[in-house]
Length: 61
Image (cartoon, rainbow, N blue to C red):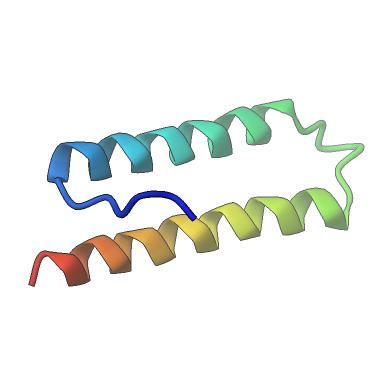
């Protein structure tokens, strides 16, 4: 497993990278050809980002 991210700048950079990945995948999906697996992958990324935001907020307490 990776090193724990504790400083704010690194946390923001991590979240930006994940959001950029999400946006890239979203842009690459053709609406007419999207299937359940594509939507599930997007939802997984959103869940991962949400989890990291909660984790980072908890570390700041």
